[in-house]
Image (cartoon, rainbow, N blue to C red):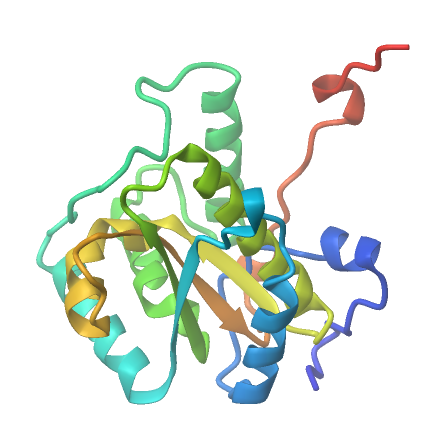
Length: 230
């Protein structure tokens, strides 16, 4: 059990609203059967015509060490990797740019990182490739020839994992950063060439004492993104 004020979510609403992108984890392992149960629950996510297009690599122990060592070695060498798909808008525009900046500066402020402190910013970004010290890393991929509808399906599967994890008192952090090192991931985990690496995800027990986990992003009010038509 998680002893640091992160109880199991008892209802669907609690699981959804208590989900956070956790950026520091405790070293305690997660039982394999618990991971299997979370994936089994998440597999109930909807997909068009029930094609279930997602693939998941569950990485722990020595395999996790190999992946994090290889990824951080590339990062430390100044190798930014190569994106196999575009995730963010280009160029950035409002209102999305302001929201992105608010999130970035909010996290840095919680960590005591001042504007212009590029060394500490880079060190924080590097922690992505350690899965933020989580005991379980998940890597998601999809067949390269599948269209955008299957990406939507896979997104619902990802959300289902994050919500299901809260039902066990566990936390997660979805990490698109890993997509840039898809060649390293492909080589280490034996992924075929016809797969696109979508993202990674850290899974484990949140370290509630770490200041990174004291930061919480805001959300728009319903009136700002929804219109009701009677």
